[in-house]
Length: 398
Image (tube, rainbow, N blue to C red):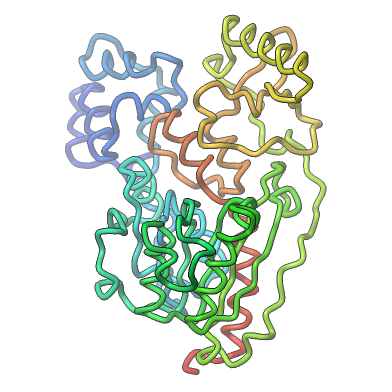
């Protein structure tokens, strides 16, 4: 079953019936902690202790448990395509959701990525075979490779100067500035920027006005788009703004850009749920009572805050957030005869439209943060296709 991924060292461990070495060798190759490996293969709440006992030879795993460890993938499933037509760079890359949306259209390869979080870097490496560069604020724009397409999901920070004066300097002190300085230096043919939907109304619209003016002044035609994940076949009510731009003197048919029409395929939460889930995802009596108490308190105050329950027949969930790991209150799954449960990291990946072969090499806590911070892949894939249609029609060497 896993002969192709066993090393000579592993085979000797099997010959010597040394299961402990087999497990530790595998974990070292995966560059995982015992906690990460335990969560990745679906062990129970204290699975890291189990891994530790296995590696110390105190106990041995069942064949099913050993199979789960040894068959855990070691090769990146989404490495760059060999013959791509366009080069892109991936800024504020996270776990590569935007890159993946472009790659799934074929004809696009990444030549540079930047992400400062070490856990996100680990997930990026496992899936794309590359470690992103670190903090983009410390990278000189001249050192960034030339590229056709720039993508980035920059954090929304207040522009302290917004509305007071116009132009490039208004963005200084914000992470958007780092995107702008790279665009200004490299002048890519197109870009796609992603952010929360409230970016348009932030600071009474002043923030978005500065963003549009700066990009327009650099010679780009800018198309702001607003999409919900649930309209693209993913059962999540996640609404985001996608800012598309074309360099007008490099893309002659920029005006032909056609925003993708959401298919509005009917969805149900049951489509992303596993049939059998480890008990560790069921919330405790204490947490469940706390959720109920807080919801009742909010109800008495006349607001609708608090936990939300969903089941397999629900059409979609609330937006998955980066804080989901704390208590899971925004998305709880009903369970007959038991307390509700949180969604699993794999279910969170599906809720963002990530393919099944996407590798989750980190702890559950980090996985929730990563998918909560990521993008809905099918939405990006659709927008990317529309961008690529324009570039294809314009001609590669234009």
